[in-house]
Image (cartoon, rainbow, N blue to C red):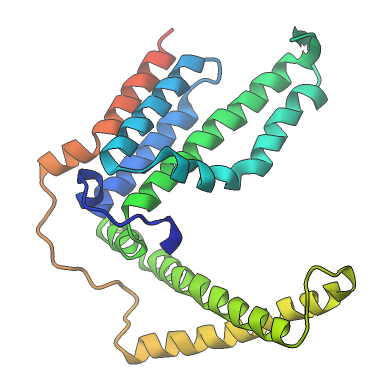
Length: 248
């Protein structure tokens, strides 16, 4: 998560986190609810996102490189037209399944837009602010606690993995060789044990420093209606697009 946050001082970054969370959720719901046959609607959603990127000063290349996480879903979407059944149509001289092509497009378009919305939220909101935003939205305390410890635990595992990799390389381990896969597998098991033990120590340290299960709020003034309206403007435009797509 820290790698996904781009600190900056833009209108998008200055919005309260709870406003951005609600806007992102509403935008994703609009995308998911759009009929897959309304191709133009997905283009408008992408245009809205592009406008947000301009306001937040997020380079498209930065978004594109991190959106590669959805590659497995892209492969599935591209394979569906060839493996699905149903009526066949010819595309560039190749016979493909019409229901499969629509299903693949549905996965590709909605999945990609969902990932892009999530990346935009992560780029403009720090992990701590995300937790604070969930707290202000009255999300159950248990969910907030799990999310908080998960964010911290990811850093714990990454730190342990880096140290163990350095130690293995210093002892002559080279992960490029196939016969050393056993050592890599044992290292993964050791990483789980060590990260679990360190996670317990991290939790005890948090409790000893006054952790009560909730992130301390910064004491900001209540969010005004003007701020809510400005933050939800892209989601409102997405709702307009959805309404036009659902119009018979």
